[in-house]
Amino acid sequence: EAAVTQSPRNKVAVTGGKVTLSCNQTNNHNNMYWYRQDTGHGLRLIHYSYGAGSTEKGDIPDGYKASRPSQENFSLILELATPSQTSVYFCASGLGDQDTQYFGPGTRLLVL
Amino acid sequence: GDSVIQMQGQVTLSENDFLFINCTYSTTGYPTLFWYVQYSGEGPQLLLQVTTANNKGSSRGFEATYDKGTTSFHLQKTSVQEIDSAVYYCAMRANTGNYKYVFGAGTRLKVIA
Image (cartoon, rainbow over all chains, first blue to last red):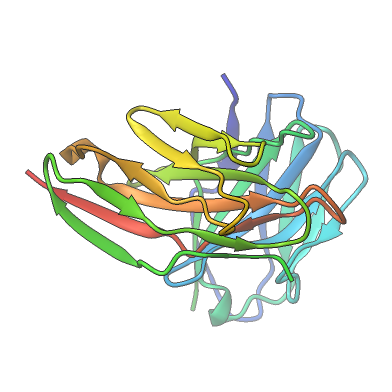
C-alpha cells in the first residue's frame, strides 16, 4: 500500500523564522504535491513536482518554496514564516495519468 | 478557470438517513472526477473516481455519477452510519493544459447514532 510520511507532525515557529516541512514517499510515484488545508477553503495547491529536480507553482505559491532532490523526497520551505501561514499542510504523491493522490498524515504548523 | 464547487459546508444526519452532497465543476474538456474522504486526524483518501463521462463510480455504499450535461458529480449514499462521519472532498483533474488537481471546499458530515 502507498506510504507517504511527513515530518514534523507538529511545529511551532516564530514570525520571520525559517520552516522546512519534509515529505517522503515509498511508492515510486513521479508526482508529488503540497497543499494547505484551511476551514472554508478546503485543500489548496501550493507547489507540485513531476519528478526529481522539478518544481512547479500551484495556486497559492507566494511565501513558499519547494525542493525535490530525489524521487522520494519533497520539501516545502517557508523562508520567512508569517502568522497567515498557520495551517495544516498535506503532502501527496501520485503516479501518472489516473493520478489518484495518496496523502500523508499532515503537519500542523503554528506561526506565532 | 478550473473550479469545483461544494455549497454545503456541513451536513448533519441521523443513522440510516439518505446522504446527498452537491458537487459541480467547471473546466474545458472531460476531466477525471474524484471523491476523497478525510477521517479525523488523517489525510484525505480516495473514496471513488470516474474518468468517463456518464459513468458511475461506487465504493463502500457511496455512489457518484459523472454528469457531463450538468457538470455535476454529486455524492449519494442510501443509508449512512455513524462511521461515515468525516469530511468529503470533491475533486477534479483536468485532462488538458497543466493537468492540475482542483479540490472543492469540503463538506463535513456528522452522523448521529
